[in-house]
Amino acid sequence: MGVEVDLYVHAGSRTVPSRQDYRDLIAGLLREGWVVPPYQVLTGTTDSDWSAAGILNSADPGSRKMRILYTGNDGEALLRAWDEAPFGRKNVFVSFHALRADHSELRAFFERQACSSGEAILSALAKPVRVEIWNEEDEKLIELRLRHYFGVSGKNGPSTLRGSPLENRLAKCLGGKLVEVCEFA
Image (tube, rainbow, N blue to C red; front, side, top):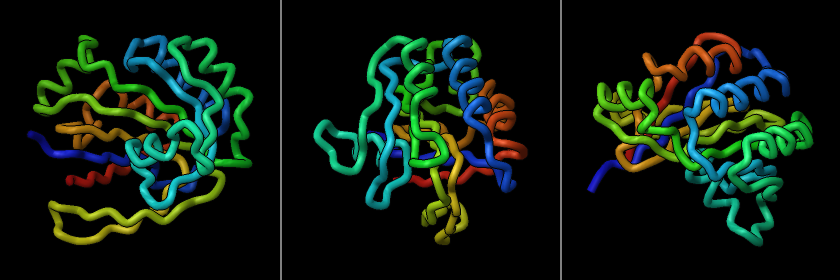
């Protein structure tokens, strides 16, 4: 048994990352070995769940809401699919099966947090969406306007990426100080 965690990491600023900012982040995650294949590049929408798990659930084969542009284990092919995706015109997502929990730097972080990895998704939305998240700690509903964000979903997944090796790389891509909101189910 465990707690299902949905973590949203975004920049509190109005900075809009470029296609190249995203590409640099994706290439860095691959180069550092921080993500586990298979990888996907998706375009489309979801009914209401903008978490990593919700987006991936909308990407079932045959889905009318989500189109799969690439699925596979090849990092170079993933980057080519990203380069061809309709960035800025449509919602584009890059999913990773998981953050690599056995990577030496990430393993130490996960051990300190007493958590495990989860599905990860990098989201570049064409326009902001309103997302309501129940904040268990403050016992209140939080409304976010998300456009460019990184999400992690999973059983006993991380409730923060602060202090992780990913923190600076995400801040550089997303444009500034990171804001994290976590929902537990």
